[in-house]
Image 1: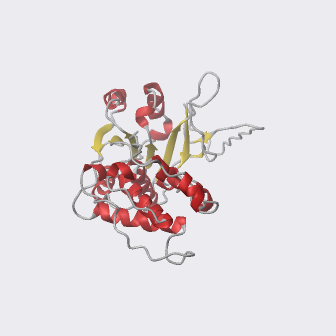
Image 2: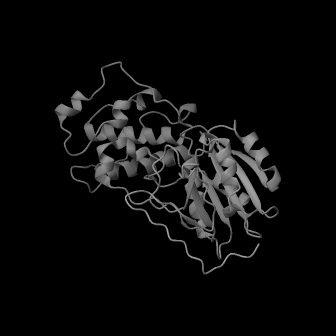
Image 3: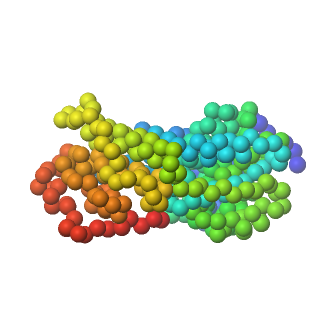
Amino acid sequence: MSAPDPSARQHVTAEGGFAYGVVGADLHVYVDGLPSYVLEEWLPPPESDEEWLRELPSRLLSARHEIVPFTGRTDELAELRAWRGAVGRRLAVRWLHGPGGQGKSRLAAAFARDSVAEGWKVVRAVHAPGNVLPGSAGGDLRAVGAAGVLLIVDYADHWPLPHLTWLLSNRLLHHRDLPTRVLLLARSTDQWPAVQAALHDSQAATSVQALEPLPERGGERAEMFEAARDTFAACLGAAPGAPDSTPLRMPPPVPLDGPDFGLTLAVHMAALVAVDAHLHGRRTPTDAVGLVTCSTANRPTGRGSTPRTRAARRPPRGGRTRLRRR
């Protein structure tokens, strides 16, 4: 087989629809022509519109928007760096797992930033069916001059196994003499044995990394709370310098020790509730369950919110809704 012509060009045109094409990778489609997944070069998230965030404060909790600066997880990030830099087999695949809200996506984003800084080509895979496809999908994914290729796959345990095997056979991952790493994010290890077996012929190095709960000691939870609190306060207009604001030095509404706050999401929710209570003159809940009431996390704030409408949105006394971990 002759080498590909470096002067080749690909022209993709869409009229009133969605078109997707890649350079330096394979395109796997269904029989109807729709892609089974799309690839895009990893980029930091765009700056979020603060008015849009204030419409529904729970949007501040989305890991995808990365509203809160990344803190903690230094040991886990160091472990990923060591995995990336390990010599030996060219292709290595790691299954990073932990419960929903544990911080997998934020850790992967921090690792992606670090990898880009080290000269790696970082690509994100999105399972196409049932997802809003990114407008930046596709493009030139060639790794010319890159130190290596890193592919990040979130919700890998939601992918059908055939789609994952197609992805793992993509030519993007099989450049001769170019270090390649695949980081698969999942909530459990149920599908990992089948994925590992599918990699047998590729002679890939495979490994599993569990993302443990945030440590109760050492101050990591407090540091994470303070970073989230200050960020949410700035977004919602309760930070120093905002109109009618006072300096925020409020402690967590409930102690952050214990298993309830082993999740990054739980610590961030505690910070959001604390800021929300400060803004509206409310008493904060006294337990972890009260922190995650849907009315507090999802109530619109800011412009258009009056004492009358805020009172109408308060839950009845004694009524609390649990947040389901997904």
